Amino acid sequence: MSTVKLLGVWTSRNLSSRCFNRGVVGNTRINYYGALRCLLRPFGTVSEKEAGVSPGRKRGLRAADIAEKLRREKEEKPDAKNKVPVSPVQRNVAELRQLTQQLQSVHPNVFAKALSKSILYQDQNLIAINKPYGVPVYSTGGIGNSIAESLPVLAKIIDCTKGGSKLHVCYNLEKDTTGVLFLARTEETAERIHNLIRSHQAEKRYMVITVGVPVPSEGVIDIPIIEKEVMGDQHHFKMGLSPLYRPTEEGDGLVRVRANRQAQSAVTHYKVLDSSSGCSLVELQPVTGVKHQLRVHMALALACPILGDHKYTHWNKLAPQKLPEGVLRRLGLEQSKTRHLPLHLHVRQITLPGVRGHDDLTVSCLLPKFFTAALKKLQIELPEKP
Image (cartoon, rainbow, N blue to C red):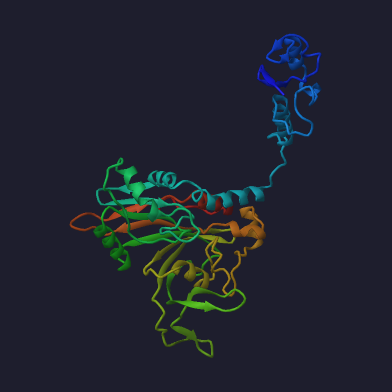
């Protein structure tokens, strides 16, 4: 069967005679005016036979089909004015869930660019950045971006694509900890900063929100910490306390016990800055640097776990943090949604001792937005000076 293409539409020599009954093109007779009338008719009135499509054969999308599809999608899509209202709890949960994902779904170069905008201090030897929430310093399984892996790109951005520039991590911070993080331009400088922190010569100040009010409001926690195995249905390991003293049988004093050889000395200074709604804003100064030291001392020694610490709120199980009803109301959350709460643990300030006649270097960092939002909801005042 011979065919011709007219105005972008393939037609057959067997088309209706009312469209093609005059003229000859090859072996096909064409009535141009009849064909044009046929093509200009509403699409819905053209049959498969008239359009030259075999019955049962799938026909491609036409302009009318696309327009109808777009119209249906627009009707099905909820209008911004008429959409179902989202409850405050749902809105809060969505914001918290987005907080943990926003920097893990971006390209590594975009992540490095974001880090370059968070620089707190910079000189020829050191750079201090504001470490974001939910990003590990070193790469771990299942995590998209890390500080260490972004350093080559970050170095190029800082030095305007200058070749050969490098950056090195000076110390580690937990994935969910925010705040001041020092990067060094040379391995020697990174080692020096690491030694200052390990030897307790650098002063670090943390800000935390605790569930509960520590008593007394200021003091020193000096209890060694050891890693312990937690048995049960959820077998896991946690850092726990290894006290050097225990109460006497009469309960009127303390008696020293034999120290565990695997326990590490852990000392933390704490001070309550303000409290309200059953929660507190506490400043912490760790003298030592044991794994999870601040979290363990607050949760197990003072019975005031850090807000969002789902690991140390319960000892025998792994479960979302359980909050008092009053705290839930203030935060606008339900207990079933507390698993989305971020860890409110922030490195507010670090002071490095001066060397070679230089003054001490102090770098401070503002609290993240989710931290200040929680303080506002809990009606806790933030001191003006860090």
